[in-house]
Image (cartoon, rainbow, N blue to C red; front, side, top):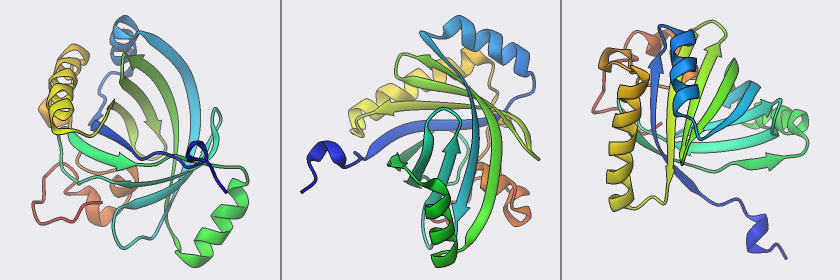
Length: 195
């Protein structure tokens, strides 16, 4: 019987994704703000076809294989994401299995540089076919009071990192690679399902 430690815990972030106009300047600002530098991670994310939310299998040069199901609305600006990170010992086998069962929607390859500012991860991403992006992911307990606090933290970091409102991106990288969604990636769609 599996112990509670064997079951990956659900996690919550408050996130933004933004186009990065000057990667060197963003790196300098992130280095100045960071409480810890985690280095560079080469990542390949395979997204599978889902009815709701997103499901990706990540192959990371740092963390190995990880299956990551998540729910997050497609809209610019800070948004809540609920997710799990499930370690996968045989990513190639699981990828073949999920591709057969669900179908592959999109593959995203990126070079990610990772900084920590207390509980907030700063990602500087160079994404194949899309360019450079900056992400903020503030990890918190999912409560309304903590979410309000994280909104203030994320807003401050956006200012200090020089993220402008018109740099914000609504969807995920796989969504930006989808021509049908890329054109409206910055405009919020109030009727859009959580994905």
